[in-house]
Image (tube, rainbow, N blue to C red; front, side):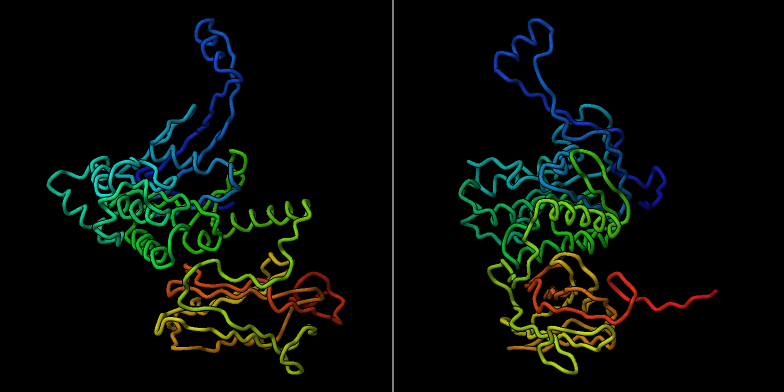
Length: 407
């Protein structure tokens, strides 16, 4: 994997030969035996092993991997909430972290008191504390009544609002986000993403851990794939995410995973300003094409219902195989000359492909409605409009690439 080189002064986060082990005992009395007799009565689970990662100043660095891979443990080490068993972790500048939901909050104290506590722990001076609290309250959009209630009465979305507002209001040099942006309502998710992008544009360093691979691709300069406590790949985000996706596909195939079967998969978001209402694949011969020929011109038509007038959005369309493997995809926001779309009621968006260069196989479409930044997914329809391509070509593979022989 390729990686960018930095001078030492440009690396605010350095993780060098870091391993993190947790001791566990078969019986409670084994702890006492170990202390008294100086003998080993424990086993060690290594959550991380021999990790070496450097994150450059102003870089947005992604962490991906399965649950239990060690990503959250790594972020805790960078945040300073726990220490490594071996190796060193050094961080320069003010750090703000959003780790587990509600981490650092006292459940019996009010939202207001917890915000003050977070500010004090982050080094906000007393002279600026009221200004800091007003910033937290305004950004979180929590009511005065809610901020006076114990946080143990908060929903997960309210937790995220208070935690994100408190962490980012300290104006950090290094921001750590562990899946926090996947919690809460769509409005606040977008608001949080916008603030995160603003930090990135200001040259702040961001460590971003997420299972949303689209956001990792779009938001992060580089990424690392963590698997069973070790770094499997590190480099440009596109390369690392592609390697991880290949691993996931192979794993699903070995397990006989049927989740990739063709089906309409609507968004799980409760309130979306725009929705996918209809998708059609057409050719010169059919308005609902199911069988196509290589090199045949086709069009994809997406009918979008706009539930909120004048909300800006973009449309992304992907051709997929086996329900998961992206063969080709594009979005209206890739064209910098095209402004975001808006509508009141409904809108038709079409993508024309003058020549379908796919070889024989079974394919389908995935449609995504995105916000004006192209990062937040408003709605989706995955693996719809299944179609089969028949090719008279003798070439093999997935796509036809023009070529000629020189003999």
